[in-house]
Amino acid sequence: MKTTHKTILITGANSGLGKEAARQLAGLKETVRIFLGCRNEAKAIAAKEDLERTTGRSIFEIVLMDVSSVPSVQKAVAGLDQSVDALIMNAGGMGGKAPGQLTSDGVTQMFAANVLGHVALLEELLKAKKLNHIAVFAGSEATRGVKKMGMKRPKLETGSVEELASVIDGSFFGNKYDPMQAYGYIKYLGTLWMSALARKHNGTNFITVSPGNTSGTAVMDDLPFLMRGIFKNIMIPFVMPMMGMVHSVEKGAARYVTAITDPQLKSGVFYGSRPNALTGPIMDQSTIFPQLNDHRIQDNAVEAIHRFIR
Ligand SMILES: NC(=O)c1ccc[n+]([C@@H]2O[C@H](COP(=O)([O-])OP(=O)(O)OC[C@H]3O[C@@H](n4cnc5c(N)ncnc54)[C@H](OP(=O)(O)O)[C@@H]3O)[C@@H](O)[C@H]2O)c1
Image (cartoon, rainbow, N blue to C red; front, top):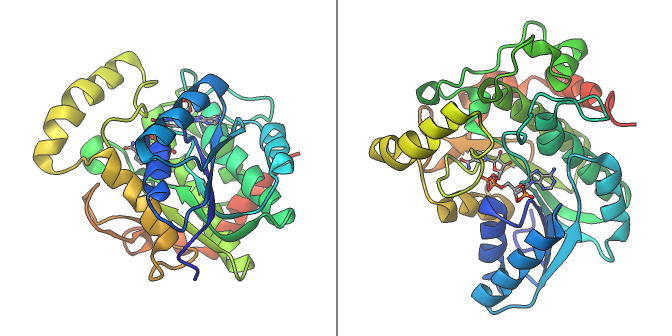
């Protein structure tokens, strides 16, 4: 596997983990161009200027794209004037103020921002022969459950296409869309899709990595008021550091850098923290949650996702 990459595209690169990954990757002399995939032009310009100032390098280029919109990412790929060696699909999070609301594609906002647009983006790049080495998807330990944060491991009845499609359109969750529970299922679908791609494409690597529980980003900002208050004001600044359960944005973003540069990591695998941990060394998460390796569920996830891409 190639471990150096000249050109890198990072989605959600204007803040948090995506911006920090851009900063770290600019520190590698091999990197000659970093595309900042962002949906908001003003925020993207501010991030680009800040990255140029702090790294002393003028290698950043803005690519406007809203990863919750399939036409938007397709337009962005068509506008790319060169192929990229590495893609980091980092955009996403808790799905904004109305995570359970449906988009015009019939998927929840949370699914659109984390998975649907990235599927369109990566598949469009592959079709256009514009991805050379590796794609990384931002997963989460929520996919194998995080007891200490009250996040249950996703539990499917059958793993059928129908059931997975019901996760995508939110009907799986009934009347109450709890973002803290839906999040693990949604990252799970993205992870299954990546593993399925790895089985089908030789020569390109597909790795899911969780950045780990990371402080100092905006990921919790859109949670309901009470939940946000508990996490942002009590759990993350006080309780979790005492338990060693949260790390810095530098450490979180370094996991993306590891994912694209470490030759030991294997295509199709989801890497995250050790059992009961949310920080520290990374390991294959299927040793904690074996169902991640179920080829039938992986293929069903691909089929379910494509029901929503026209
Ligand atoms: N922080 C953690 O503890 C943690 C743990 C595990 C996984 N993750 C994952 O890591 C990724 C980055 O999270 P973060 O903590 O850095 O959160 P963040 O600070 O909220 O950053 C998210 C980034 O994604 C962008 N984004 C969101 N929706 C988008 C869309 N539809 N189109 C384009 N860009 C979009 C945001 O842009 P705007 O500024 O325009 O909103 C922002 O730049 C997420 O996928 C998250 O699920 C985070």
